[in-house]
Image (cartoon, rainbow, N blue to C red; front, side):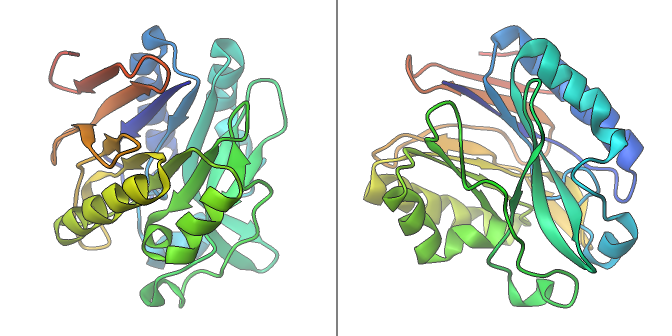
Length: 247
């Protein structure tokens, strides 16, 4: 399975521009034939909790149709981050656009305390994804909750993919924790982060992949958009920053 993580620089509050940006990053990845492309936490709006209620959308939002068309055309699954309405509440969600199939939602269950004024623990329509249900999703703070990774492993996941919005002080800790998850459970682990401003501070990129021993295989830098693709069968990686060449 080829998994792509797309490190983006969101335009805070501007869904239309962020969708266009997602399209560009997907177009960069398509020649490498990924099966799955994942974006950072709240990638469609930027991580801006105070704007979440104003910007919240439905899973079926028509503005996502250009991304759905890419999923259909290229036969890949695309995971994008957005504040999602659930009744009168708002959750932090990852909308999964699958080729020629109904959309699914992975919703953040475990919230950090500073998110609780703005969001609720969400209800997911899917827990594991991938052709063989081998990919477990996590959103930011969830990677720090031991039960989350443990439950993912017990449910049969061999890949753990965390979508985050982390400032510099949080990236190093997240890397350490995700390497430990990989080593403890024998899972291949991904983290996709943003760059640029988020909630008054800079997100620090560092999107990365670890093998099932906890060894860091590749990562993006702390300042540029880009893609990282890892083939779980051949173990080959592609790393491409927006201002650099693939290698």
